[in-house]
Image 1 (tube, rainbow, N blue to C red):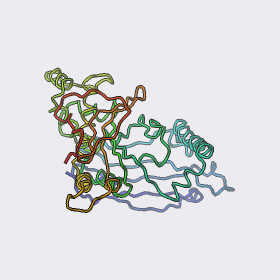
Image 2: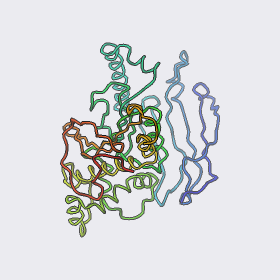
Image 3: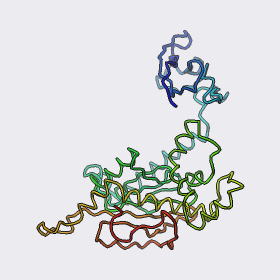
Length: 364
């Protein structure tokens, strides 16, 4: 249980040209986290510039700081929270590793190449989108996994896909962010297709297959395990053959490591998770309201069907090993309307408690 703490952190900032004289300024900040399980003193961090010998008196450009922790909280949930700065971090501007510098440089070079290619291949597109706004036909609920590159997978230009990535491509109507993104996409941007796209090898799905040894205590574990709990529930209750076989196999010897990429149960759970979230979106209040508005009232004057709201929810899966996208054949659309044709290869339907979606008609 989280509680409030009166402890504070004092930070002494040493000015670059006042270092020799020892002039400092201090500010007091609230702690980064509060917990009734947390004990220990306040945090004092020293922000220091390199020695005066290494500073150029002719340059006013800011130089990187290094941080030396002088005192940290002693414990959090019984675990030591003492943080020490590596010796390499005490070398002033050189504390950043070569890999980190290289990574940022790579992003810079990539941005330069992107601007050049857009200017050459799509002149004016970015300026048009900036001035006229976006009207993407697709919203993609996918995973935050760095191997899932939405625009790259579909060779899509900017302005095509409105993305909503999170761990394991979940939609939770009780989650404010999930609901806000969906609402903005269908109400304001008027997207026509909402796609839930999972991917094989998903770390969030894999973690849901490993049993917990006890209630999570660390803040990071509480957050992640709480988010993937619905996937764990699918694993524990699904009637799909591959998942049932996996549960039975590990009844007496629980899974202790993450499943492998080609584990049939792992791949099946990825698919079932997508199907579950397609239904959650189709059953959400936002989409149900749109589905209801898309049905003409018999007593009303004739209405042009093209003016009625139109939205479809689809379930796809991406293979990180070869880049292939497949359709799970669980699309849902407005009542009485035919689903649009999908050229993506269809994965044969499989049984399962959450594996059935209506071919036509809404999920409400």
